[in-house]
Amino acid sequence: MTQSSSYGGSTLFYPIAELVGLPIDQANFIISQLIALALASLLRSTLSHKTTSSSVRQLFSLSLGVFVGVFCFGYQVVHLAALPVLCYLIMRTLSPSIMQNVVLVVALGYLSIIHLRRQVFDYGSYVLDVTGPLMVMTQKVTSLAFSLHDGLTKSPDKLTSSQKSLAIREIPSMLDYFCYILQFQTIMCGPVVFFNDYKEYIEGTNFEKKRDREVSGTFEPSPGCVVAKKVVGAAACAVIFVQFGSAFNITYLKDESFFTHSLAWKIFYIYVTTLITRLKYYHAWLVADAICNNSGLGFNGLTETGEQKWDLISNVDIISFEMATNFRNSIDAWNKGTNRWLRVMVYERVQSHSTGLTYGLSALWHGFYPGYYVTFASGALFTFGARAGETTW
Image 1 (spheres, rainbow, N blue to C red):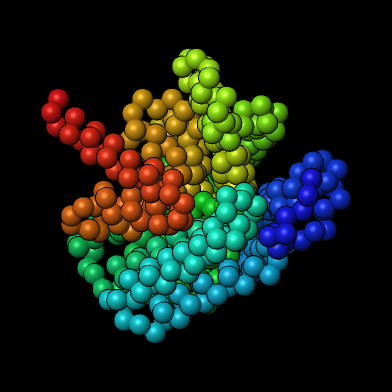
Image 2: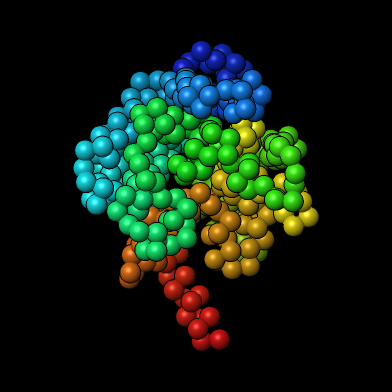
C-alpha cells in the first residue's frame, strides 16, 4: 500500500492502516466516524438538552466537527471555513430578496473550483478529500439562504407546505450558523440537515413536536436498537465489499476480455459489480445516520403501531432501492437528503422546466465528470418518458 501524495489528513495511524491493508484516508475516515459514533451519545446523556444549555451542546458539536475536519483533511480544512464565512457575510449584508441567489452562485462556484481542481490534478482518484464535505456544506448554506428568503420576504400563503416548515424569520447568530454547518454528525458525508430541524434538535423540542399526543408524561425515545441495526448493516456492507470487491472490480467492464463472455454472464457481472460498488455508499450513509441517531438527531415520530421512526434525515432505503420496480421509486430511495434539497431548491420554485433544471443542478453539484451529465440527462429523459406513459395509459 502506498500513501497518496494528494491526501492532506493526519498520518498518525499510518502504521495501523498499513498493517490492515487500508489506505490512510479510509482508515482515518473509519476512525473519525467511530469516535463520532461513540461520543454522539453524550448529547443524550451528559450533554442532554434537559441539563445542558443549547450553547454548550453546540460548542461540543462544533469542536468535535473541527477536530474531525482537521484530522481527516489537514490543511484542506481551510475550505470548510472559507465557504461558510463567505456565505454568512452575504446573508448578513445583502437584501433578503436577492441574497439567496448570490449565496447559490457563490457556493456552487466555490464547489465547482474544488471539483475542477481535483479533476485536473487527481483525475479519477478515490482518495478522501474535502470535496465531499463541501458538497454537503453547499446544501446547507443554500437551503438556509433560501429558507431565510422565504421567511423574510414572503407571506405564508405564498409558500408550499415544505417551504413553510423550513422558513426562517431571522438570520441565525454566528454560533448557531457555524455549529449548524460544522456539526460533527454530518461533516464527513452528510446527510444534509435543514436548519429548523437542527434547531429543534439542539433545543430539545424535536421529540415533543413529533410525539404521539396519546403518550403521556415526558417523551424521550431511545435510538439504541435503531443505531445498533444501522451499525450492523454498515459493518456487513463493509465486510462484503472488502471480501468481494477485488473479485468484482468495476474497472473490468472496460477490459477487452469482458466482451468475450456470454450475454447472461455479462449481465450477471454488471449487476453484482454495481451492487458491490453501492455498498461503499450504503456503509458511509448508514454510519452517518447511526451517528446522528445516537446523538438524538433524526427522530421522525411514531408509526401507527407505536414504533419509533428514526428516518427524518436518512439518506438511503436499501431495500426499497434494490427492489424498486420503476425509476421513480429508485430515485426516491437513493440519496434522499439530496433529493429533499433539490426539491426545496429548484423543483418547487421554478414555474417551467422544473425537472430538467433539477437534474441540471444535481449534475453541477456532483462535479464535471462527463458520466454525471450522461446519467442525469438520461434520468430526465426517463422521467419525461414515465410521465408520458402514465398519461397515455
